[in-house]
Length: 129
Length: 142
Ligand SMILES: Nc1ncnc2c1ncn2[C@@H]1O[C@H](COP(=O)(O)OP(=O)(O)OP(=O)(O)O)[C@@H](O)[C@H]1O
Ligand SMILES: [Mg+2]
Image (cartoon, rainbow over all chains, first blue to last red; front, side, top):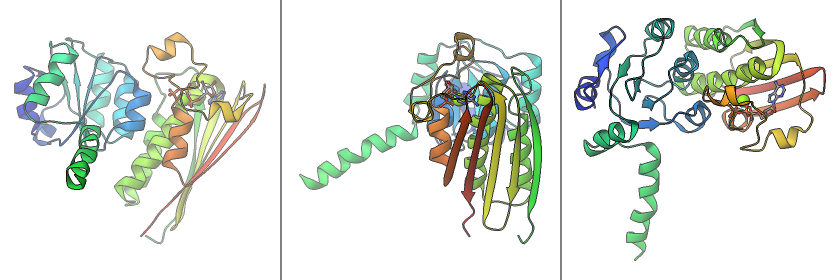
């Protein structure tokens, strides 16, 4: 899914330079715990979070996250936005609560990687039955 | 490749504005060397977890790295409170992080296990009241 589409689906505002909006993502990870993002997210995914500190950008940089959406209208400090620009990580802000943001993207077909993993045993069962 | 690299970055406890800079610089070095993306990601994640631990729990420290044709080795050494029980610290979910660290999205006791998960070899040595040394290696496969 392209970032343009994500922006439209979430009624979001892009707060970094627009250039890398041409990126697209295949999966989503959603958390306020950076510990979890570092342990469980996929490279190239979209991160949905309610935290706006500089460590969120650092976490995204290390985990090779493609884009960050801040929910509930939360905006990071200017310094943090600059860091994201420096690292070429587009930042979006939506007024939607986290559940609604996730719900809309799910409805449009985006999934987390763990969702696809948890589907696997069901397929295996069908084959076995 | 054919070329190696090594270097050192200094880390300051409680300096949350700059936390992550060393790992970011290491990541940039690996990118310039043309190392594979998944190897870079594993190294950057392990380095960042270790760097955050120094910033959160120690007074000061350093990150040394060496890259050869076959592996990336990183040593993160700090002066600080040390870890009384390393086995316990390595357990997923074990954390002594205070509330203001949790509010930043850290302190769920996943860092050390995640370093282990992302590296091919990890050693942790610590002396209580003196400091902690982490050494990890990531193999570069062709
Ligand atoms: N460099 C260090 N100096 C002193 N204590 C440390 C150090 N690194 C880790 N510890 C201790 O080990 C515990 C577990 O560390 P670990 O990195 O696994 O989790 P965390 O830092 O608490 O949370 P997370 O890494 O998920 O943000 C810490 O809570 C702390 O008590
Ligand atoms: Mg940690």
